[in-house]
Amino acid sequence: MKLLITSLLLILGFTSLKAQQETMYVEEIHISDQVIHGLIDDKYPITTYLKFEEYSPENWLSFSVSGWYYYDNIKKKIPLVGVCHSDGITLYSFVDKLRVDSIRHLTSTTSNPWEITDELISRSGFLEKFELNYSEYSYRGTWKNDKKELKVSFNTSSIDLNKVHEFLVIPLAKKEKKYIALDQFGPYSYGYSIFATDAKNSKVLIKYEMNSTANPNGMCGAGMEIGYMLLTFDLSREKVLLDYRTEDVESCMGGFWSEVKEVPDSGGKKLIYTVTDSQEKVRTITVDGVNFTLISK
Image (cartoon, rainbow, N blue to C red; front, side):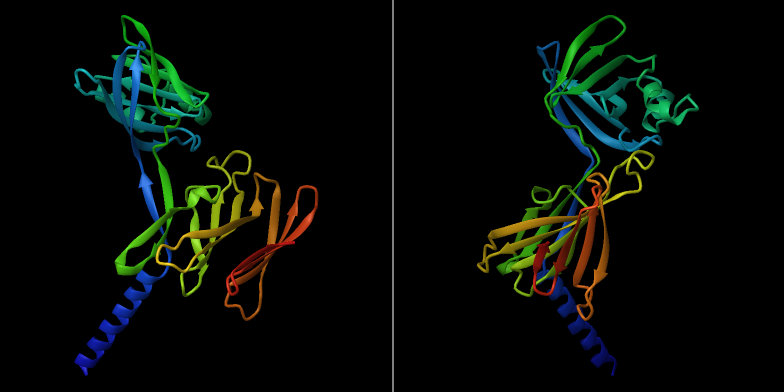
């Protein structure tokens, strides 16, 4: 009897694993560090490495970072700690460990939570300080110590150290897989889930759902951005994308909201959204994971 039960469990486990391997799914990749090249005084090439530490308690637009930089011709690492904020990034080189830890953990001397970032990026007692502002898809500013101040630039259009990328994974023959970045279709890099997929891996309905803003105390702090994507692939081994479409069903930032009803006997795979915008215009969006359609009227 034990042998029979064990065999059944093995068969069921193998069947479940096989089903998981043969069905489309979403895979997440978390990126929390970055290498950045730049110039000091327009003539000294530098390389900087930064990693995410903590979000600021005032909002999710500011966070602490740590890492190092070196001059490319010397390659002696100089430790850095700093704050990435909405206007740019400020980096320090400190000797004092207490100063380093206070920046890393965003420990501020101000009692006003809305002044934390301003206080952290205005510290003294540093050996070196980078102050770079973000403008026109670049970071430019100054590097300084107690003797001089020089221009500095980072050769990157984005410093995003706590980003999640999600991919649709399509199983192919011979245990191969096809990865498709979902942010090329939808408005975000993460927040996606499989709503429904057909047995042949030729059609998939994907739902995306995100908080409207990273700042819970700001505009749309409690709002949501919700929508669906319908992707259609050919039936060949390569699973080439033939068509896709998206429909937003709710958006605080876009100024529309919705009520949803489940179609009876659909197993939750057919939903009807009644969407109303700020001008009180109403439209209906049907998300059909049975027949794989996405219809707006």
